[in-house]
Image (cartoon, rainbow, N blue to C red; front, side, top):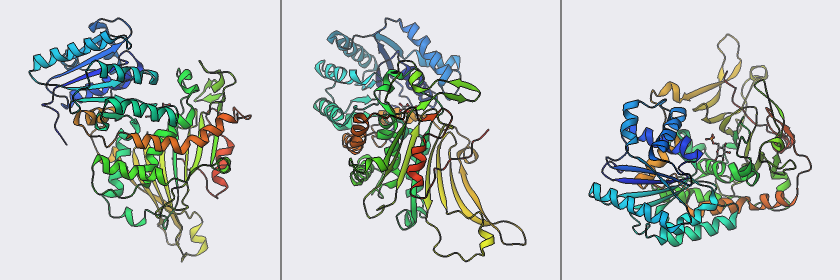
Length: 501
Ligand code: BG6
């Protein structure tokens, strides 16, 4: 890993006063600072429309750290040192003067540090501002050194295939691909990164990781929360765009990819993109049997009544937006032919959990007496991404006793039991990787487009055919019946981890 300690760095955070910076980006920078990952010379320039003094901005950032940092409330001394590096610059994103000002600030730092700085432009803004910021960075000559300047783009990257392509085209006119860091924060999660390690650092996995041994795969990312105050964004997105196009397809790629030759960013991303290219296309005929949608109605969650989606703030009372989606994917290649990958995601579900389950085929021949195998279960590998961070292998074992009874038991690798140190937040990993120029955990242009291309037929069909059944699941449920039917038709059911009290 390249050290960044001697690389002076300026972070320019567009959307500095926004939620994302307040909750995630600045707390992540603070933790990187605490863990001594930030360079000796660094500056964080928050920028937003609001006029704020440096001190007011710092106060807001401190509040974010106190509320959201994994390391808890800020230590006053550490905060005092860290906050010396924070500045605020009110900005009109359309105005060339704004960018000139950034240029001057950067130059001043460089003079002070007597060294050219790495500059990271972090776009924590709504997607309609991506083009204008990128264009203005370019016009103001702030993107001239491809080895020093990087741009971080938050999701959503495009609204559909066309818009993703045109954003890619615009960015590629200004930046080289090696400068563009498209965030999918799931890739920064510790447990998600561990999928690669688990698969490729252990001899045991690879021989059985294919259609000869694996019956089907499930990826379930469910959330108890509703849309909260993001109704305006979510109305134009829905579960398919918000979660499946990016996070869930990335998880699927990590499970399904071929063995990379090495750990190089492009090698890994090549293998992931191969999966997307191998995925069975959706056609108007097969969509009905392979993709279903839902929208939550009102209900009760942990003793509190919660509104239905259509009653949420900034949501159309007749909204056709899906808050739940389940899809059956296939990867048409030698490894996975005809192995279904079922994915589901939804808001206001019974449980918040992101879990990948790999169900193996049954043993070819059962040698045990029937009465011993009442609770027989095929082997399952369960990778729990959050909130539980674990990998469990469910195997059959003889229950202790004089008679022969077979039970399913879990062999568990639990992060909490195995490691004392706290896992970093996804944003810490991703920001550090950006500083180090490591793009492994970021989306490449072709990946984003391949993911959009795959799901466009579903989106188009759903948009053209309004659902007459919405709302079709109540808050605190496991989603609509159509999702149960989707998987039950093939003889399976959705798996869940037991809820921890
Ligand atoms: C975001 C989505 O990308 O991921 C949100 O826009 C969703 O709607 C969130 O709630 C889930 O992320 P996490 O890390 O809480 O699982």
